[in-house]
Length: 107
Image (cartoon, rainbow, N blue to C red):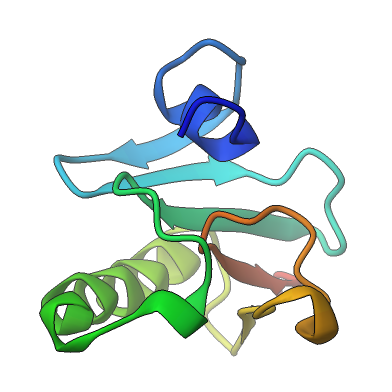
């Protein structure tokens, strides 16, 4: 999507602090962290929000959640962390490209 902030980050038109990337997922540190550790997982496919998900997205969403857990542990969140997905304007979503927040504090 041409004017999507996260699509531009995926395309490396806008810099980010990359954590992980594969054919389906892009993971980077949040620019305004709400915790000691705060990163975002986004699908490379432009999906505006959870409201657009269909059965064809089951594997992708499962992959993202498993990767979220692995990366949280790698970042020291071994005692727990929070995941959050804001969905739609009424759900607090500000960037309209599906994304999963992972945040928490080490220790």
